Length: 154
Image (cartoon, rainbow, N blue to C red):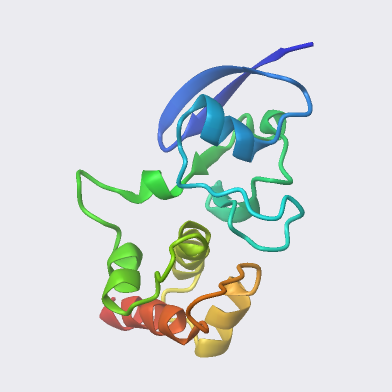
């Protein structure tokens, strides 16, 4: 059985055919070619698959594609505006918060959601917002400094 789903991803509507049990991460990567969303643990523990749904971070490995219909989905590719990196993306680069890069898309999207809701977060706010994203490379301080730099710049 296949169902038709209209997904609004990064400002564009995509009509896709999916199995009812297809996860959003798989549809984004395999059908839409948006490979910035990473598949990590498949259990909502690592945050590598984080995308934004109506501005809120979700684990796309736990979200059925059919559940995303009617929501605005933003992937890391959707932050680019006319070839310009989002300020959070630039800050991650400038502060060395990207290392291997596997966790980076999910971390950046979680940070974007935080800064949208709270433009001047405390370090504790940042740590809480990023707590659903695991990084094995940086030790988190460079990531926290990157997010703080954006908050201070605004």
